[in-house]
Image (cartoon, rainbow, N blue to C red; front, top):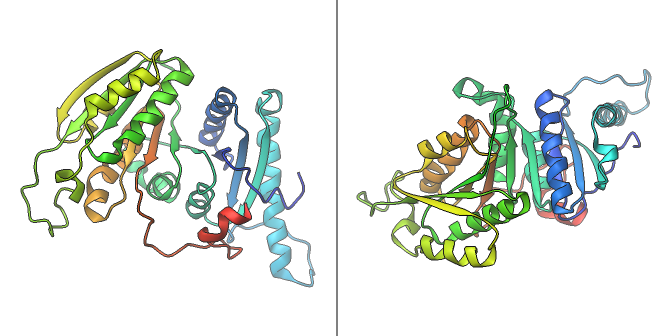
Length: 321
């Protein structure tokens, strides 16, 4: 790798965030296996904050440029070190590298515009760890444009079997089922579908804590959707559980047994953020296994495009990567 690193992301690649921590190296192992199974390339991304201290040549005519080059060099050295200690070189998976200057919680969602999947490591579990997750994994789950896997390694490896997926009866929930069935087939694992049924809204529609607007509108016929996917994925063994309300408690219990937990995250305003968005984030915080969060919004986010240190906007990122 050059000191500048590779500045482009191959479309439909699997991106794994690397920060040098044991958590990110565990995530790399998971992403490497996933890339091999899916037949995709793997991109190792290290986002280095512009305020990071880095050695630079004294007396440089342009201190700002010298600092940027020092940051890129430092990031490249970290990726090289991680590669030397991993099995990436012998995996047969096409490997790409990306070093960018910027906050990881901004850079990773930006890269998700063109990636097939983004994988990050989790350093802890429970509410005390919220701030550790908040700047990266939670921001990524809330803003990514592609599925995200937050990987958590078992302190003591336990026997795990199967994939669990939580779905509601919103029209978009079929996307979560598609992702979960595809993963079950790829990995040869059984699938447990947990279906959350919602009561009709009892609060005014303008109440910010009310049910999402679609909860009393178009519904997905979940049993029919499952049957449809049984025909499309005949090798997947499927079981299902139907519950009223949110499926968070049951899913977090299943997380102690399965290899992967799949949830969707809606982005249709404050109510959705307070219900299914919050459930997905809560599971990322508390589940003991890797969690895949599948973005379901078909409505573009209204927040302005965020920029990295280099001034590139999310809107133009797909053209530049």
